Image 1 (tube, rainbow, N blue to C red):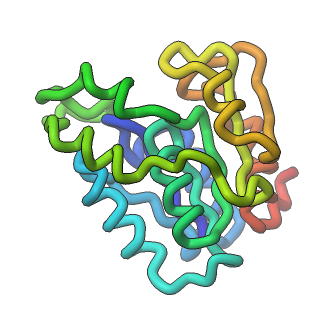
Image 2: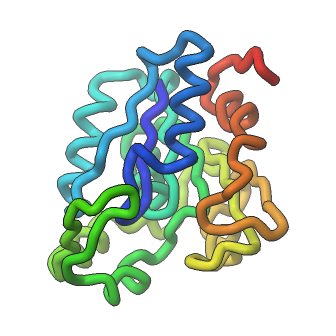
Length: 193
């Protein structure tokens, strides 16, 4: 099963989520695809992810996390012992998201989105100072990420499988080019390769 966790203020309507979900369905693997709308509260987002992962064996679960979803995916992979694909993951969201406390809207709709001050502490509780089994991770980082520093990402996942994209952006606009290696890492055979 693939559990996709989107980033801050994002949704299942993000380009990466839609592309990966469409490929899973095209491969007849739609029943093995989960991509929830995550609540603003990190504690509630983790609870939802754990509920969706259910009792799926670690060997059959891969969490794909983008940006803040990558931060969550790291904590979940450490807790559950499953694999994780990290797409321009947040490394220190406590620092980066402090300036976003308040009410705004989601990126893919006009729905209100409130990030409360107490959520910073919820993020602190999910910090993973160092990953315990680097081979469990596949990092895709872009040097052109305009939101997060790719060097922080590389330093946080030493020994992990990595693909460093020269240029690109935070959203990884050319993500379609990386579907096959992501699916392969997750244990899904991609006949479209």
